[in-house]
Picture (cartoon, rainbow, N blue to C red):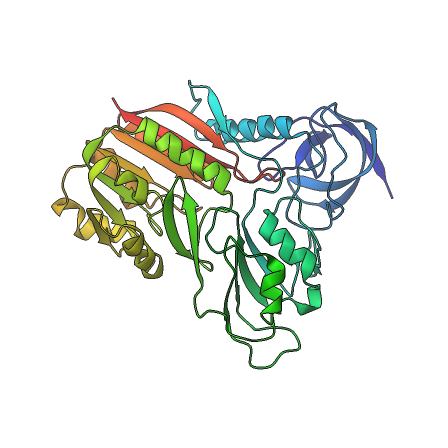
Length: 409
C-alpha cells in the first residue's frame, strides 16, 4: 500500500474534504479542513482521485469522536465526526460555493435555521429491515439511530431485524404526529404469509408495547390507511407515509415561522410544487386566496383535505403545463412560495416568474446547485437576493437545504 501525506483544504459538496497531490485533486471522506493525514489512494480517475484515511497525523480542533456505533458503516451520516457548530459552518460554505459557481456572490449574510443535532428525524425508508450500507449493496441491521425521533427508535429497539418488514418499507414516527408510528411495507414481512401492505400503529397516547400486544407484525390489519397526521404549529396536516413530507419537523416549524414573518399579507399567493399543502395551510391565514400547483394527484388529494374550508384553487399539473394552460387566467399574485424537487424549477416556471410582477418569492430548495441556477435567472430579470438561509434539516450529514428570499426591484 502506497501512502501519501497530505494537508486537507476545504470540504466540498457531498461532504468530502479535498487535498492535492501534484496539482491533482483528491477527495477524502471523514476528514476536515486543515488536517494532516496519511492517506491511501483507492480509486484513480482522469481528473481526480478518491482516497481513504490511513492515519490522522494532525487532527482538526473540530474533530470529535462520533457517538454512533454504526458510523462509517451505515450510509446515513457522513459528518458525525465533526462538532455540530462547525458542521453548520461547513454547510454554509458549501451553500455559498453553489451560488459562487453560478457567478453569484450573495451580498447578504447566510443565516442558519437549525434544531436538535440528534433525535430529529421522523421519516425513514428501510430495506430488508435495515438501512443501506455506506458502500456495497448490503444493509445495516441497526437497533438504534441517534438521528431518529423517539417513536422510531422504540420501533428499532423493540423489533428484531428479522421481524421487520422484508423488502422496502416507509416509516414515519414523531411525537408531533397524532399517529405515533406509521409503517407501510411494500412486500409484507419476512417469514409471514398473506401480510397486508398497509399498516398504521398507535397514537400519541399509546405506548409501543401496547401495539405489540395487538399482534404487532402478526399480519393483523390494524388500519387500511397509510395516513400520517402531523401537528405543525397547531395545524393538522395529513399526508401519505409513502409520499414526500419533511423529515425534520423541528426545523420545518421554524421555516413556517420565517414564511409568516417575511411574506406580506395580500390577496393572492401562488404555491408552486405545493405537495400536500404543507405551506398552503399557513399561507391561507395571510392571503385571501391560495393557488396550488402540484402534478402529483395523490399529494393533491391530501392538499384538498388539508385546505378544507380555506379559499383556494388547486391545479393537478406540472409547473410547465400550468404556465402554458392556466397561468394567464389566474389573478395577479402578491407572493410566490416555491419548493421544487432536486432538479429545481422547470425552465417554464422560472421564465414565468421572471416576466411576472410578483413582488416576493420565497424559494425553498433541497439542492443549492439548482436553486443557485434559478436564482441567476431571477436576478437577471430584476429580482434581488435579500435573504439566504441554510436550512439545517439533516444534521450530521452533508445534505443541504436552503431558503432564498427574492424581492422584485
